[in-house]
Length: 260
Ligand SMILES: Nc1ncnc2c1ncn2[C@@H]1O[C@H](COP(=O)(O)OP(=O)(O)O)[C@@H](O)[C@H]1O
Ligand SMILES: [Mg+2]
Image (cartoon, rainbow, N blue to C red; front, top):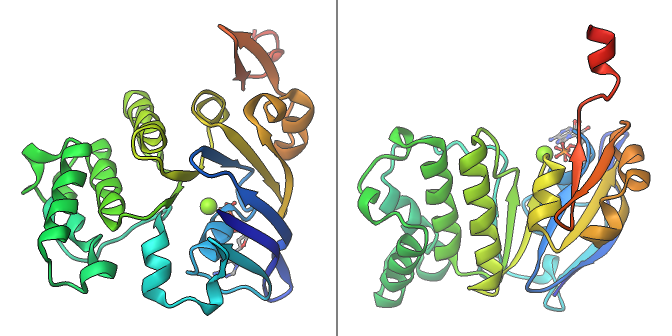
């Protein structure tokens, strides 16, 4: 289990995380939602120890992350950052092999090769394993990055806006992959999403953030309500139910009249 206790982080006078506390549910998908600048990426960075924090504690399986070695952290948590620039030209297979670095330090053993093969196969990348990352479609590239994360073989996976630049079909495919990480591989996944409907349809739990604070945390049905969302996004939502699922309508219901 991952527990975050009273985490505060600031840049100069700007408090970006303000006394954040919550526990992440194991073997579930938790969607983290909130407006731009709410502190979502910073929170993920803190939990994965990429970003320092001023006060508070983060426990991964009861170990405070400041007391853990970098390698140990990398065996527990993997993160797909919001923007990932590689800087070098790599093929899919090389990228996936990078995921084994915390385990083998760059010298692949049999177990590492096996994990790489499993990840390539799970993400259906076999026939494009030799292609360069920069030559792939957005959806294929994102699958390759997820395969790298899978090869890292961590129980906890953090995905920061994995649907960025993906069209609807690839977005749905990505969310199905996220679900299968939990259902088939028993991972714990935290995913930052902008589309509330993807959160409503594919997450088990939702955490909402505003101005560096956690505002609410609960099951999808408890959080995807007009009452809770309007304040978070400073917007007048219209939420309907379709086939037992909540659906958020983003358009302004008066818009048609005013444009006519
Ligand atoms: N390295 C940094 N230096 C200064 N301010 C930062 C830095 N990173 C993030 N911030 C600020 O922290 C706030 C939260 O950012 P971020 O965590 O990226 O939010 P989100 O991911 O929810 O959009 C923003 O106001 C942003 O400008
Ligand atoms: Mg962000």
